[in-house]
Every structure is written in structure tokens, then in C-alpha cells.
Length: 426
Image (cartoon, rainbow, N blue to C red; front, side, top):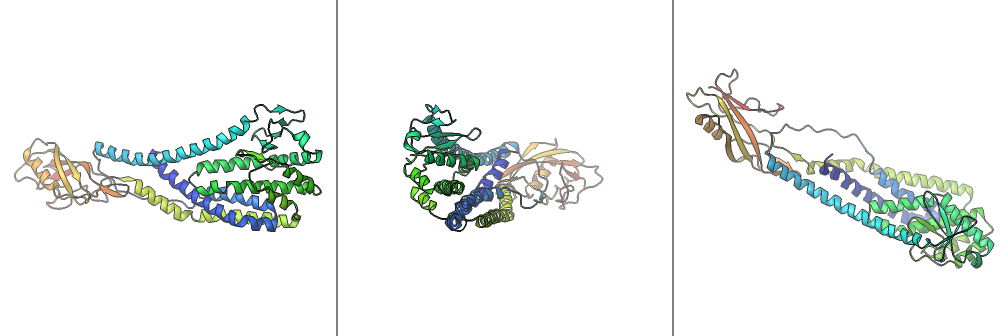
């Protein structure tokens, strides 16, 4: 696969995924509060899975693609052909470089935030219970680490919180780890890097983490139904993190704690309502992905059109009147002509590349070539001028002579290839 072909597939695919991700994000932002009120915070958090599902659905093939037959082409003069191909490759490479630069810049930005958080834990003291005792308290406790999850607790964890509050805070972080929230955060960060040019993913990242915390609070309260007051008091003592790390789950995120505390006072949905919410979320995610996939035929046609526009088609055959046989000549030979085919298919310039050795044969070939026409070469769907080489063979003893002014043998569009224009004696 050439660079132009890779860019012709990659860039439209990223654009379709970004559009689908943006539409899904808007849908979740509109539905998250109604879903939370009807089915609980867990349903609103689960609805965010529609964003990657819709993005991935746009990358799935929607229908088999047919093959388009093309006419065989004459050999294009190499210097000009190479120059236009390099121009097409450079344009695609420029867009690919811009996307890669943005993705790397976004990854670096998120990586620096994660690095700062973990650098602050460099002097953390391991505890006998397996926790890490941090030298500060902002945003802690926090769970981090994808392959080997750890929990860091604040410096005043033992003195600033009661035993029950400590147990609830640790239960919250353990619920994050058990629920796969660290991996969900990593997936959200990866999607933001890949589709960095979709602003909704960055603007709504805080809402995603907010729903993640509310869903975790709900799971903990379901396991500890009588601990609402202690849980709220622990939240009141929280010092918010100045910049939460993207690959960590903080007890104190930068979002309104008031809503978290008020959610504790609400009755948790019963098991039947949670089951109904799970089915509603499954239907929502599947319908969102199906809608993105259903748009694929149109996207496929658009991609095929874009690929066709970006493709290079070589000079095609026209109806070429063969040269008239020079009167009285019995000589034979090959004349090699180089023709410049204009954007309208006419011959705008020509030159004798190699003589047959007989001036009358050369002049007959040149005179005929001035009236030939071709299908012009196209680059990006637009015709461009190009040079072609046409060999013309004069053979007085040919068994299948061409009629004067008629179509040249071997040049009809239904034949696969032209090696030489063969002219027989009249």
C-alpha cells in the first residue's frame, strides 16, 4: 500500500469516526441526567460506551465493494508521471503528518498530567496494609496503575478521618478498580488522542469522569446502605485535586461535590429498575452503533469517490487514424513518436524520438499523429497534460493492411493493449 492509498483510507476513516463520536457525545450529554433520574447513576455512566461504539462502527465494512474496470493505458513519460505522483503523495503526507502531530501533542499533554501525579507520589511511603502514604492530600485517596493497580492515601489518612470513613474511601477506590474504571479512563484518553480534532471529546471529558464518580458512589452505597452520613462527611473533608490525572481515579475530582452529596440522599433504584436500565443502555448503545454503521454505504461511496478523485489514471486510447502509406515506398521500419496529450485529449506537441531511417515514413507518421486524440491523464479527477510514446511500424508485406483514414488495427478500445501501430502498404 502506497502512502497516497494509506492516507486515502486513514484520513476519511478518522473523519467519519470523529463525526460519529461527536454525535454520540451530544446524545449522551442530553440523556445522562434523564437516565440517572430513571435508572441511577450507573446507567448514565454506562451510556458513555456509545461514544467508542459509534466510532468503531464507522470503521466496519458495510457492503462488498465492486471493482471498476479501466482501460489499458499507454506508457506515460516517466519524468512527468513521477512528478505528479510525488505531488499527490506530498499532499496526503501533509494531512497525515498534521493528524499524527496533533495525536502526539495530545498524548504528551495527557501524559504530562499523569506523570506529575505519579511524580508527586515518588516519596510515598508503603504501608503495612499495602497502601501508599502520600506526602500530600489533594485529590486523595486515588487509584492508579492499569496492570498493577495501587491506592494512594493522603498524608492525614489516619488522623483526619474516622475508621468508618477510611473504610468507605477505600471501598470507593476498590470499586473503581473492580469496575474497570481505570481502563475506561485509559480508553477515553486514547480516543481523545486519536480524535484530537473533535472538540466535544475534550469539552465533555469532565462530565464523563463526573458520571464515573457518581456511579462508583452508587455502587459503594448499595453495598453500605447505612453509611450515607459517614460517606458525606468524608466528602466534605476532601481537598480537590488541582489537575486530576487522566489514568487515575481520584476520591476528590474537580467537579461539584454538592451533586455527589445530594445523590447520596436519593433512594437507590431497585434491582428491577437497574435491570431495565441495563437493557435500555444496551439498546441505546446498539442503536447508536447501528446508526453509525448504517451510514457506511454512503460513507463507502464517498470514500470510493475520494479514492477515485485521489487516484491517477493514465492516458487512454482514442480513435487514431493511421498514417497514409507513402506513395511508391516499399521501405519498412519503426517510427517512435513522443506526443504531448493536452487536457482535452488533443496532441498539443510532438517530437520524433527515433527515426525509422526513412524520411517518408517519419513524415507520414508525424502528419497522422497531429490529428490523433486520446483520453487525457487525470490526477485527483482532473485532466492534466502528459507525454506518451507511440511506436508506429510500417510493414509493406503485412497480411492485414489498415485502410487509409480508418481505425488503426490494435487501437480499438475493446483491445487490451497496444504495442505498436502497424501500417500496411496500400
